[in-house]
Image (cartoon, rainbow, N blue to C red; front, side, top):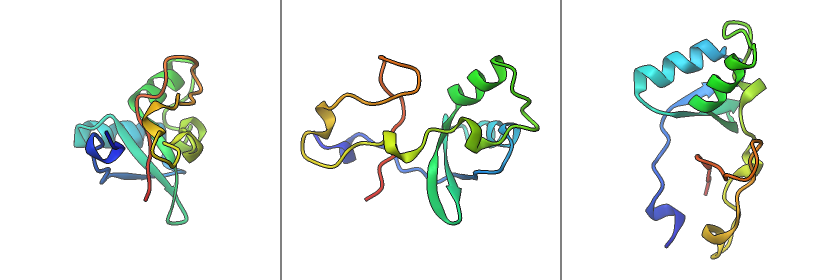
Length: 105
């Protein structure tokens, strides 16, 4: 199975300097669990509802903390190659593997 067969297209982007509140509001309005984060017109990472929840639970101010402080950088995306579906993912959190991956062709 190829990644392309199970992934969804991301159409919503967030600026790296936007606040966590702004990211959470956009996810709520669009009924999505993640946003692609851009900086200077390029992919900078992905921020998920879990990233926002974790940051706030650990004391981050949602109005003063920015998306780039809690996002996952592109290095955690699916590696190239035919066996990419079998390779374990890298996460900040540990062994459970990523819930969202960014793939840019």
